[in-house]
Length: 131
Image 1 (cartoon, helix red, strand yellow):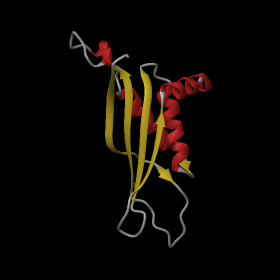
Image 2 (cartoon, rainbow, N blue to C red):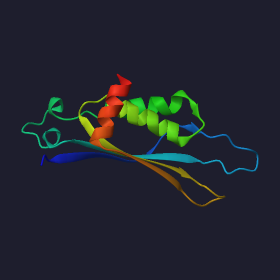
Image 3 (tube, rainbow, N blue to C red):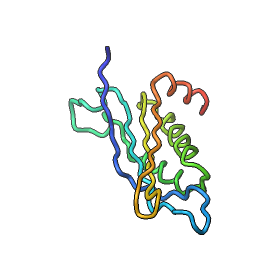
Image 4 (cartoon, rainbow, N blue to C red):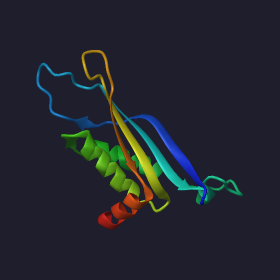
């Protein structure tokens, strides 16, 4: 069984405009992203301290920020789908777990959480669909 490593991004507040709200609706003041990427262990356990040997996640983070700013999304699900598709563009990412939270849900309280888990088989399918 191959060894895997994880790159985890936690509590990233993304600049997303999601949903349509009426005058009496509670409008979320934050959308927070948690992203766990499965990568091969050789991208974490490295013999030399060189960026060329690891998965450089900075371009992906910039891409996620750009996706969040790009549109006014009707649903969180669409933004999550676009993030998963962006991840499929990186061959180092073998699988992923996306969690998108918004708060509050009621006045002053509550967090709504959506989670999408993409295994290796589904990631391969995304890669085929994106290319």
